[in-house]
Length: 157
Ligand SMILES: [Zn+2]
Image 1 (cartoon, protein in one colour):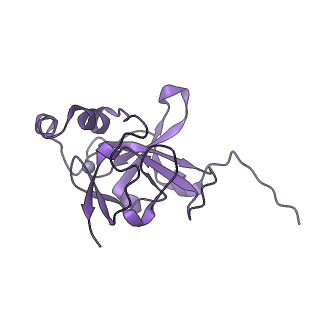
Image 2: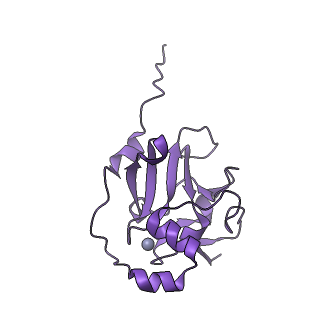
Image 3: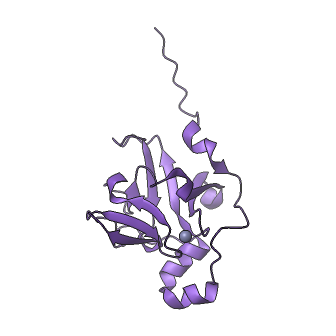
C-alpha cells in the first residue's frame, strides 16, 4: 500500500471556519475608552491593537489550575484548563478552544508570514494565533498560542 503525504495541505478543520477578514459587527460592542481605563496598557494593546506580549512573561504560561479562561475584554468563555498543554513556546497553549464558535479565525499576512489569527468571536478582540502540524502530542495537533493578557482565568473544579 502506498501512502501519499502532502505536507502543504492545509487542515480542513481550520479552513472550514477561517475567514479572509474580520466580520464588522460583533455581538458585543466594546467601549474603547472604558476598556482602556479598566485594563493596563499592554492588555489593551494586545486585545485591541493585536500586539503580542513577550514570551515567557505572561501570567498564564505555566498556569496549571483548573478553570475557564474568559476573554479579558468581554468575559466570553474561550478556553479551559482541560485543553491547555505545555508547549514550551513561551505563551499559554491550548489544543482547542472551549467551543469552535467561541473564536474567530482570520488569515494574517503580517510579519512576512502566513499565520492564522485568533479573535474572540463575541467582541473581536485579538487573542493570539493558531498553528497546526507541529507534532505536539495533543489530540488535534494544533497549538493555540494565546497571550496571557487576553485571558482572565476563572478558577473552577
Ligand atoms: Zn471578547
